[in-house]
Image (cartoon, rainbow, N blue to C red; front, side, top):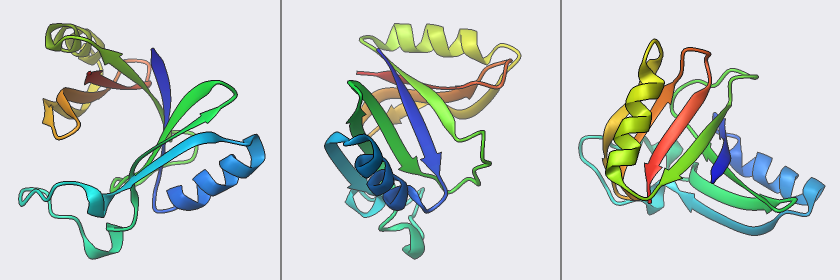
Length: 133
């Protein structure tokens, strides 16, 4: 399954509420940065604690993911595609193929939400979040 993933720069809560109203969104779930396990290597700035770390909502039978990001977002470059794989080998293989002539945005590594996750922009400028279930 491929999930559209939309990033915002501090306005994710506002956007989710808007899309929920416009599209009659269903099954909304929101996790804020303050809800994540603390990581001393990546402290969360005070202003971001209530920002959205990850949210999901179903719109027209499609699950859409949302988040705020510390990196600046540029209108038109706010959407990436998230792909879930059942094994770490599939994650590594796909990630390595996508990064050829592309740009690694986040190296493959274990995360609290996945045993293996990485984010890469392919040679065509498309962002892919590769996730092990």
